[in-house]
Image (cartoon, rainbow, N blue to C red; front, side):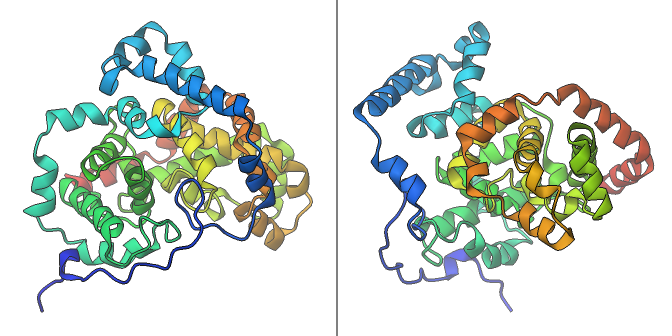
Amino acid sequence: MEKKRIDDYEPGPVPSPRPLDRFGFVKQEVNNSSEALTKGRSANEYERDERRVRKWRKMIGVGGSDWKHYVRRKPHVVKRRISKGIPDCLRGLVWQLISGSRDLLLMNPGVYEQLVIYETSASELDIIRDISRTFPSHVFFQQRHGPGQRSLYNVLKAYSVYDRDVGYVQGMGFLAGLLLLYMSEEDAFWLLVALLKGAVHAPMEGLYLVGLPLVQQYLYQFDRLVKEYLPKLGEHFSQEMINPSMYASQWFITVFSYSFPFHLALRIWDVFLYEGVKIVFKVGLALLKYCHDDLVKLPFEKLIHALRNFPEDAMDPDTLLPMAYSIKVTKRLEELKLEYEKKNGKLFSSAEAGRK
């Protein structure tokens, strides 16, 4: 039987129009606090936002022409501005600049088109099966086999051909889907390559390789950090037999793009693309710290539920992110990485041998 491709499917009916939030997601039941914030914005706040955009445009230059020069001259200014959030209208371009994906695109003309049009992937049916689960409440991805789902399919299929060791794993859809909301297919593909192959920071492909080796390492590091930074909570987790694989795996696999409020995920991604995965650890610790006094009182079942359903006030970027930024983990993460590799040396060498 001939294998079906995405192009063989007719687009489904266009979903009925429903009220959308400012990011394009179907609005849930009225959220009074965020709605009030949006409606209550003053002229001063709009003017402040305009000033921010002008500063960013000056920093970037036309099409990103001044970016590298500015980063070399004023790295602390760049870091501070990114920590406050990249203006949404410039986010796609800035993400490409800080991730190194723009350089990859320019060095590989025509490669994406080749992968999409002329190559075949063993993962095509898996991708088709999963794409409707990626941001299903966003207007761009809602139409079955519509433009958004086709773009998502193309990016994931192209990556599965580009890197056959990784191929396709379900969590990758949320990374690609998030990127497609801010850039073209080809740009999203090269940013995915930059992340997984390590154009700027350490490669992340181990999140998706067989056995999820990098997920295991990150969970080991996070478990130790919880015990060290939040000892009372760490002890309570041990007593209740809670470990990070029960609640934190998706944080790392999708970089908070799955099930976290979108406005918070965007702010985390701004920092993640600039500074690397340490922000995931810092945000995770900040969430636990914010909810610490409630979590230490809960028995196993309620604890699991709470760790998968944080309260709305904990998800406010202006509260959570400053708390995360204040947590210093860089040196300890490196020490724990070496410790983990030493303990699991045989596992690593056999995995490498299997790939050769």
